[in-house]
Image 1 (cartoon, rainbow, N blue to C red):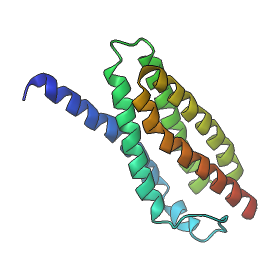
Image 2 (image 1 turned 60 degrees about the vertical axis):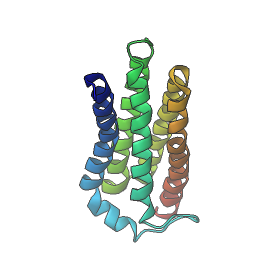
Image 3 (image 1 turned 90 degrees about the vertical axis):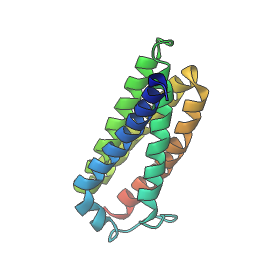
Image 4 (image 1 turned 120 degrees about the vertical axis):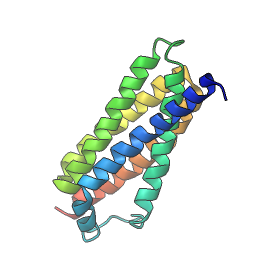
Length: 161
């Protein structure tokens, strides 16, 4: 296998590892709050607890693949760097949300933060779309899940005043 063929594979692994690591670190530091989460009132259509890590793992892989596609275009498209900065910013907002929601139990604050996260995801999708449509499409399940998470977050805020 040529050296050129190996480099994209390494960068793909790193691109997937970054969101998985961000999610894993957030999960590790919020695990006590996650355990307490099962005891609070949930809105209708709240999924079973086991589904959250499964969905997030899939979403993080899709996000990593999307970011990798943009990373590969960074030399040929001058907007790729800006798109990747938006991606990193939304990943940071994703990380902080866990602490607001699970550790601080600031459900209203977490919901407001999630609205900003959602807007950043949409901006990231738009930026990705202008560079690589497939990368943008890979981010759509994430946007949909965060929309659903917003419903759950607001429902929990209202039910657990």
